[in-house]
Length: 307
Ligand SMILES: C[S@@+](CC[C@H](N)C(=O)[O-])C[C@H]1O[C@@H](n2cnc3c(N)ncnc32)[C@H](O)[C@@H]1O
Image 1 (spheres, rainbow, N blue to C red):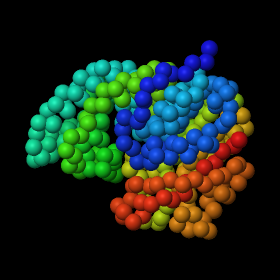
Image 2: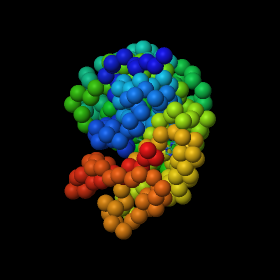
Image 3: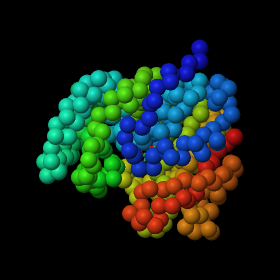
Image 4: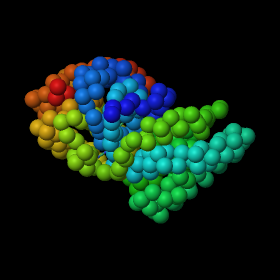
């Protein structure tokens, strides 16, 4: 039986670089028509990030199974914790929120730096499989995401979370309903950590796969790679293209998005060449991750589909 998950307001519980919330409407115009007809049984998103597209699809279309993955261990820890033990997580975050909101700015900064230090110190001991330590870690991640400057997950080359303290009047550290709604959607979702190719076994002709890899830098200076110490260079983009081809031959419906290099250099045909056998469209997106406010205006995003 095909089921649609109950209408709950599940939305990303983290702010994440490259998050697709603002692009969702434009992107959904390009979903495969079979999605609303119930002909696609599995939704797969191998670069899940904050999951804006996943949460939207899970609540809008009749899909039976969901598979999400990412190379970033912290993200997978958080999704798994919310799936398995959301109430324990809510208890910790509620207590931290109560503490934090009573503090003045200097005390808040200290509180933030302590949780950031705990988060970085505990990384080495974090188990590969689910354990109760994952609940504490997810609480730290959400806390830092809600209280750091710009609200983004950002690590340095040694893997330490290094975003500075952010000044917010009333940060919402525990969004209880959002977390419970996310947990409900995640009930029927397989979550794992891995390279984007690791989801291959789950994909067949009844699958819809959405790829949102790290952006190819839109300028020589915008070398934004905040997610991990892992570098996603042009040869990685081409390795992904080869994977895309393989899944295309299997009959899966595939959609991929990336920054359009022609925003900066009209002659740059990197994706046009790499995906010349597929349908390519350009849509308008507004990009926020740029220290220069002048450059935050609408720019185009490139979409590739095999249908
Ligand atoms: C543009 S973000 C995805 C954003 C997501 N669509 C959202 O709405 O938040 C790209 C993601 O790819 C992940 N990533 C980077 N290299 C990867 C790889 N080789 N395999 C799988 N995931 C990878 C990063 O950790 C990051 O979460």
